[in-house]
Image (spheres, rainbow, N blue to C red):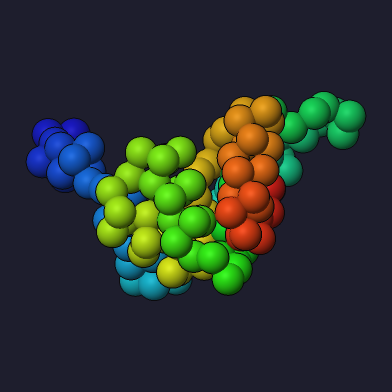
Length: 122
């Protein structure tokens, strides 16, 4: 594992946008999809269909007409810099946050919709 230590150190200091670019580059280079793995994982272990989902993904479908207001909400909730928040909003549709609790995800969605965005919870 020592050959990966410098790589892991760089990953720890990377911004959300840089990590997003890395995932896209890996997907393109190797012809894989991170979404396919995420979908296949829970399907294999889903023994009880009545089990309630405990973590949600907040996806910005569209920034709407008021991009600046949406950027402010993204910047505040995700604790990002202005440029990172702008890049995420401009890149819609984009996943804003994975693994959120239901209440937190719904609150984030409500804030974004209040700013004029179209949001999907997955």
